Image (cartoon, rainbow, N blue to C red; front, side):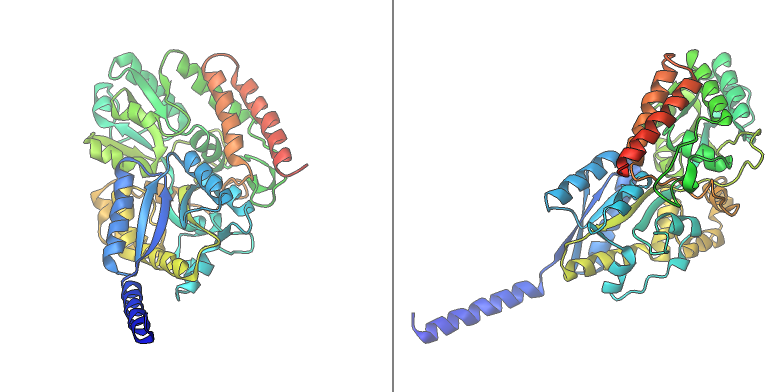
Amino acid sequence: MSFQGFAAGLAATFTLLSSTSAFAVTEISWWHAMTGANSEVVETLSKEFNESQSDYKVVPVFKGTYPETLNAGIAAFRAKQPPHIMQVFDVGTGVMMAAEGAVKPVAEILSMGGTAFDKSQYLPGIAAYYSKPDGTMLSFPYNSSSPILYFNKDIFEKAGLDVNNPPKTWPEVWEAAKKIKTSGAAPCGYTSTWLTWIHTENFAAWNDLQYGTMENGLAGTDVELTVNSPVFVKHFQELADLAKDGTFKYGGRTSEAKQIFLAGECGIFTESSGGLGDIVKSGMNYGIGQLPYDPEAPNAPQNTIPGGASLWVFAGKSDEEYKGVAAFFTFLSQTSIQARLHQVSGYLPVTLAAYEETKKSGFYEKNPGRETPITQMLGKEPTANSKGVRLVNLPQVRDIENEEYEKMLAGDQTAQQALDNIVSRGNAAIQQAIGN
């Protein structure tokens, strides 16, 4: 090839590369754990962001349940192939915080995209939960939720219960559940998702009871569990007694019980506010009430703690990729997006502006009960017992809790035995996890 030919070829190649670069799109992978109606929201938000600009493309990938998604992300990081963004449920927060060097704080990501992160724009309880003790916010709150009570109005009417006055305390739930079953209005009275999150962690916060020492782990990692105190024992023994004749029906460790409620098998159901989308989609004639509390707990009701998940960003990506992540988070932070996400999914509006816009729109007057998860969480200043639960191995401790609860519900042990075992086994696991 002559010099002129080489030069012409080089020029053509340069032109091609320049043209390719001009139209290059940086892909941002987003691993998530959403199913059903909430999965449709993930797809819609990604599509809207991708159509709003031409530099970045968010690619959502479903990776299974919350625990499965967390495990997949840990395995991918070890294989040096992590996604850019991973949705991590609240339980995994302590795990991610302990993974120093594996993640980048959300505030740092946004500043790389030219946006200053203003934590004061977010609901205080949510911002605090996803921050380090020094106030540095580590992850982006995507789908925060609070557990609430749902009830089937048609079943309530058949059982002679007042659809305008759902049960507010656990004894009232037990009585209503018994009436539903004995009247034949439904095969079972009550079911619930997440015995760990709703009946243990939120039961503690809502009744202002200690879950563990060190402010339930927010003030330090050397935590001793205290969930075998008398109020917990009484609550779980009552639940176990109701399970003997089917008044309470156990569905599974995470969200499996939702299908029992949607099928009309049980009239009362406790679940995340984020489960609302599937209930609305089912066409059920449903009602909403606040999470029940124990009337014997002196300070109840206190405040509930957030569940759901936040978006974590892995380290080791290029500056251009982080700019894409920042652009996506900025898109998600828009008031109109957050307000719509809240109204469609049942998850909390994570920004104060989205909450105010929803109130001004008259949404809560048209949809009674939809403000309940917010007022539950913001109604009182959190105490040392109600800021949340954070353990370096909370997924493992929850597995222990589930194993002991299932033995209890099968009639193999009492509530006292189950909770004593949770404390002894859980404390041993915590000590091992922190290296003692």
